[in-house]
Image (cartoon, rainbow, N blue to C red):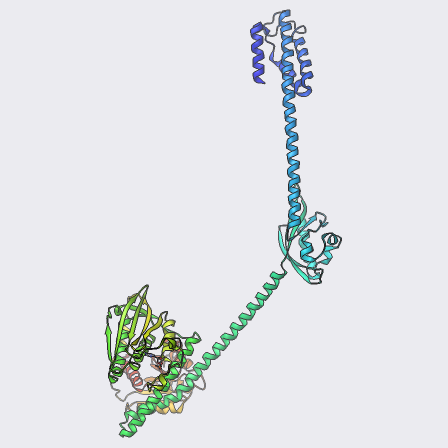
Length: 633
Ligand code: ADP
């Protein structure tokens, strides 16, 4: 348009000079008329403009002189031309604009129809029930999914009072939820029950959200409901299975507790009589008996020792099985444990004419993470088997090597008959001797089962290979450990103090309710002349005696009729009069946790029954020696 106006101005200028150029403000009414009335309007306004610019305006606007007829007619013609051109352009523009508007409207209607069709398809195809609710609470038509979910035909269902079908227990809650959504509340998820045609209740899980109109006012809601009956049944089954499992776990824990109580009781009951058998046996053996009596006593001791080993092994296996084995894992120099075990087995090997040799043991200087005592027990078992089941004049070779990853391995190889492959899966079963019971070789069939359990409890593994007729190799692998930084030199020095002979000035108090045990200690102390022994068969009496007599050492049983020995110990430690008197616990309870507890409560040492008489003397002598050195003692 601007270009057109520029062109008209140029033409007028060329034809008539500056004086014939029409005033530009005349274009404005022409343009407006063209826009409003089209071609005829533009033409009429142009004529009027031409007339006005001519006869009605006798003066030339630009020059102020009277107009020439030629100028006037040129302007009239010019305005007419411009009016027509503008009218035509505007009419065209208007037409194309209208066409575009119509097209856009058509497109919008089409999109609307398409989206309605899509919605209808979704409504029809959805396996979930879709329900629309108007702002006034009026329910929309049910979706076809009602057929699959509740068994009703949608048309039939639409006629029913759907809200009153809801399970009476859920109805009020659902109503309240819908009301809140219709008030513009946030989207919600809820469950409720509806009846199926066949009479059963169907659990529906609904996801509902409110809708709003163009002004943002709540205009209804839409709810999508899914049949979750199976899911709910499963959830309920799962919850009850969980409860059941929890009950079973509690039962198992109770059974386990009962088992471990039984174990500790049995351990006590078996060790107490064994204490008398082995204790008196050891004392008799020290008495320098006639040779044939000496031999009988040795048999008693051997039988008692065997029984004790058996009890210990059975108890250990039971502890491992019930997960109650307590281990004290620490960095242990493999070489130390190995040489101690070899040292202990050497006499047996020599007696049987078996050569015992350690080879390639450089890696043994390294540390493994293990329970020192238990590791020794495992190594002893493998070494003693290698000796026991060797051929006569055979050899046992012990090797120590590093294994892939983070471990060290000890291998014990023998030259015995080996183990046939078909027997290997029974090798680690408790009491399984694989026919050795008929060979005269002594054993219980518990050693390997226990060793495997112990090794695994320490985080290692135990295995074997065997070539029948040539020999077997048993191996233990344990995780490597870092070298520990500090050692308890002070403690060690303390513990290594010599055992000076008692000088007759010591009093011992033994708190113990079992007469046989009392007698045993009395008899044992006959070997330490000059020691005075006081005894109390009850904890409270023991405490009184301790306060009155201030003995140099207290021997304490844990199983007392009036109070637990642990409590007696606590009283002793808490009373300034008895605080510094060393206490040696002598108990049939050999569980490591119990031992640690009592030592932590302040016991100086913990001896397990049956008593090893020489260890007993060692502990008593050391305690008394330290007592003599105690400035406050
Ligand atoms: P025990 O030696 O007390 O019988 P173990 O559990 O240590 O019990 O061993 C179980 C059985 O495995 C043994 O009775 C024996 O038959 C077999 N066995 C163990 N070590 C060896 C070995 N080095 N060579 C051959 N057989 C062995």
